[in-house]
Image (cartoon, rainbow, N blue to C red; front, side, top):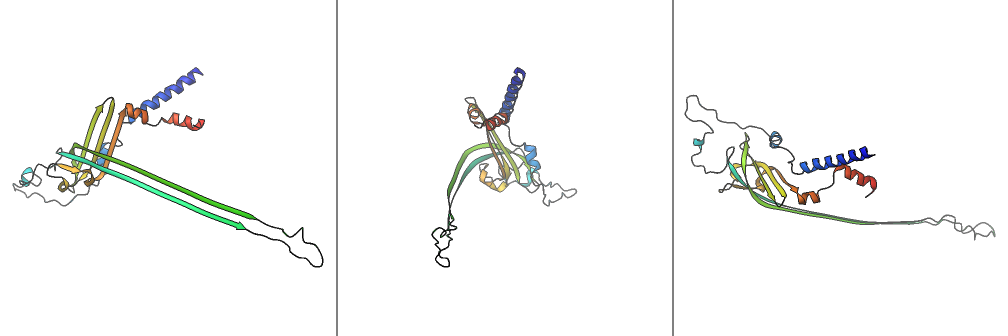
Length: 228
């Protein structure tokens, strides 16, 4: 019994440590994100043999500003995400059924007082229900990121990450998405609402997340078995 109890406690600690380590781990890596993006190319102008003109060189856009357009260029991502969802529904049904069947008279002088009512069913059903759900989330912040890749179509793949630890609580913000060069403002910033294929993760690890995260699989299984 002692060995079984020790093994059980070890499994609980192992599941808890695995859950704690995965609490601040991104859902998928940057390489997995890039593999899922479309890689269709657009027609490009080939370089002429013997010409000094090289397509894509820094000298091709002399009038351009310092806005991000190449890999490793800095981009300020302004996260402006407001999500509100609400739904409500109600149902009301009612049904009543009544029937009477009997004999009111017979031939001759026979009495029908005992057989006047042969079949008299009654049924009634009523249903009334109502439900309502509402959720609201809001995230506003700004963080600097980089252009991690450029697609053949000209779109920029931008990723920004911020890791902050305050009072034993670690928060990680990761955002990545596709940006058109024209959507980048003059100050080098872009709003999250202008990014396509957006992935935004807010991860937490510390005293607050430890107190609010759900229990591990074994504890949840025990709670279901015990009926709590």
